[in-house]
Length: 142
Image (cartoon, rainbow, N blue to C red; front, top):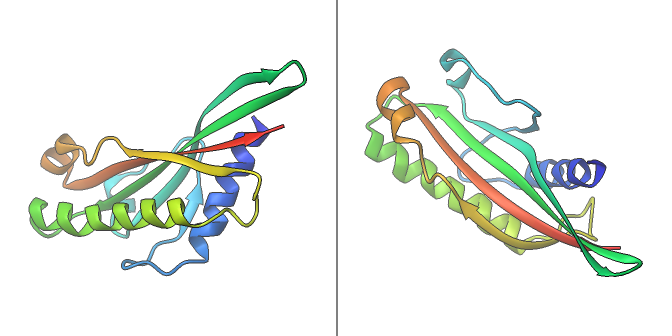
């Protein structure tokens, strides 16, 4: 699992180097779980999620590392305003990671990204919390 952790730490370091439209401190978590009171400020949780290993030859493999980037904040404005502003931030992070190589782990190349869910309606309705998960995948070969 060290490859997944290395890629995750490289993503955290990369996000710390960039200024985004809304300030946040990216942090790697194994089990991100927050009380609503802890989400008064924007939280960006970076979590190693998957590691796929495919043989290329008898002596080499392709590694695909999936990392979740969770974006959460308790909302005060309307859900529509929140989805628009924080949804834009999710897009901004996704585009930045797509376009920027990981300086701490240059062997890992961005492969693809998905946002699933775009936001969690139940969190907005029941807890007044915006939650979105950006899943990014990086590949590397040995």
